[in-house]
Length: 426
Image 1: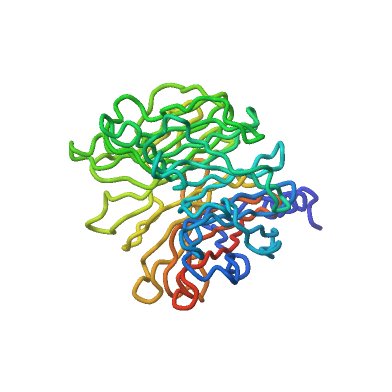
Image 2: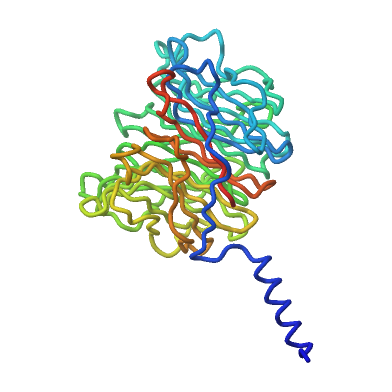
């Protein structure tokens, strides 16, 4: 006769196995479905630099990109259902009356007011002011919640470019950050930022985020919203002439707009260039994961993807984390956090199969403790046999899936570069 305690133990073990998240070493690397073209039938010139946000209320995505179908690049977007069925066609977000170039968009979703904010670099005032940072709010139905508006202020009279945006629930507003050339003669390019209210107003002054010692070239910022503050990251050349290459620096900004402490270096190793940072917030572990492209192993495995965790108060955790050791170049990472299983997905452009399929889109899961979960895996599908770059990722907590998007060359001869995307299990 089977003893009751044995049955109970077996049932308990079975329950734990069925309910537990995938363990380290079994990353469940499962892209969902095929990759799909997101840019529409009329996007027959180059589409690049995509960004993506997920709307939890409507369970939809908004993908935005720089689109060259006209004489100059413009900002376009398209809404997708959770299963990637398009919701209508792609649509122009930047003003239809401006002939100037508009590039490098980013997008964030406001969960309080159920509205997106799309930001970009804009050349409409280039003769008088240089490039500016503009933005526009988009409703879930694809209509606009008002006109475009300039985010960079009256004193931003040089070039401002490559913006990033994050929404903070406690302030019910956004922080937009960008590269700014107003102090170029004395300091080179700085990182600036400005709070934008939920209704698209800019009542607060701009702030210089890169610190007093950041007197070399600061570039390519990203931003994530934590519990009561934002973390802004960027690539910084203050130590370049000392032989340390480019570093990744960061600074915290209060949700109300004040600077919190000084800027600090994120990467531990300082003997080569670290560039192209991205950052995600983990609301369970109360930490950020910052990832970047890293040149420390250039002579052996070429460019790699590394990362480091940073506590909510700006304290760096443990050491740098190597995401991949494959002997080929890996470029331009992005990262998103899985709320359901408390882990991250890091994505990048990967050249391991460059001879046969060009650069591909790859990914890897990382635990909240910094552990690497399983191996890295290819996201772009079998039809992606040319080149994929400019990778971005967002998490969908409704479906416990990620959406990875990229610029894709497979139809370049007939359509130019397209925007493609594919889902990945959580």
